[in-house]
Structures are given as structure tokens and as C-alpha cells.
Length: 65
Image 1: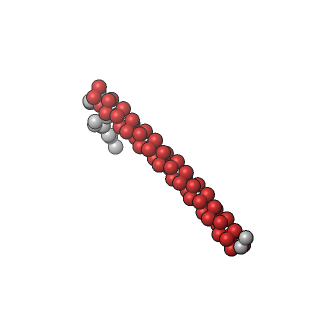
Image 2: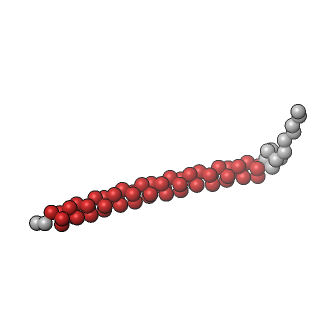
Image 3: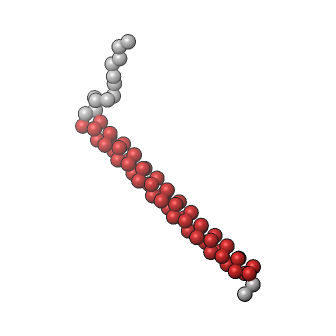
């Protein structure tokens, strides 16, 4: 078999593997971003719930210098 063909097949396999790894890393980054976004939404929802129960709390503050 021609060595050029063997090298080309090996290079192709390596490129496919690197593509698979890159895709897996991107998928993990997307999942992490989605989880963080859901956490922010929950945090905002809990703050809105607190304001609905105690609307006067956290709206104003007094400051002396």
C-alpha cells in the first residue's frame, strides 16, 4: 500500500477525533451556560417572590454620612 495513502488515512482519523473532542467540549460549555442561566432565573424569581410578600423591604434605604 502506498505510504501517502496510509498517512492521509491517519491524518483524517486524527482530524475526525479532534472534531469529536471539540464538539464534546462545546456541548459541555453550552450545558454549563444553560445551567447558569437557569440559576439566574431562579434567583430573580426568588427576589420577585420576596418583593410580593414584603413590598416595602429593599425598595429604599437611609444613609447618613
